[in-house]
Length: 249
Ligand code: UDP
Image (cartoon, rainbow, N blue to C red; front, side):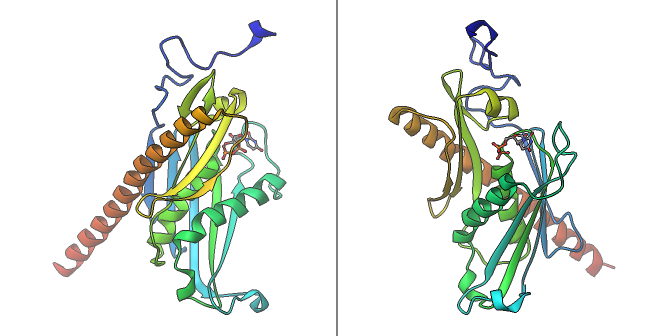
């Protein structure tokens, strides 16, 4: 029934959480949050919170999976049982298997895999709290964690979903917008190489709407890229400070 429809955008163009149509949720990225991983990052985007650990390049087990000319990238996207309102089974769901694959495919073009034949690079993503956009936040944080692990890359990969809600193109959908909106379109992008490494679409857009949404997605990825760079720079400056303190005794 039309009257029962949930309104997601006000007449003033404000969204359920008070954001403007083009506005990202607050983004916080921290680098080097896990002592036992080669590279790690934490991301909070709105209410979504994820932790990423990267290992490698390292010897690959089982060995028969080794690729003679490049590193094998393995990726596991996992949602903690407490990350969503209704407890999620800890066993891997079909959705998690699909997301692990598309996140790996979104990251691989950025990694210089041919420098490390016969090794593996393992990426573990734990969703601690989910409120929409977790695949994109996973790509964003994993790319930072790969850089933190010192893995040579062509570029960082930044990701953000755009979509259509109440007939309007919006940026960085939260869970309610994802669930009750018309379209969800996650995009991952290498800002310096200007290459799109992931583009999915759930729903239907006209050609004009797609063009508008795509442009907004690229601009959102460029903003996310600034957060990635700043997080890496901040981490490096902390390391420099510690080194300086140590050398000063
Ligand atoms: N979600 C959930 N339970 C699940 C899977 C997803 O509540 O088992 C929610 C969660 O908030 C997630 C959102 O649905 O972020 C959107 O999921 P989608 O599959 O579109 O992926 P995402 O937008 O997180 O990349």
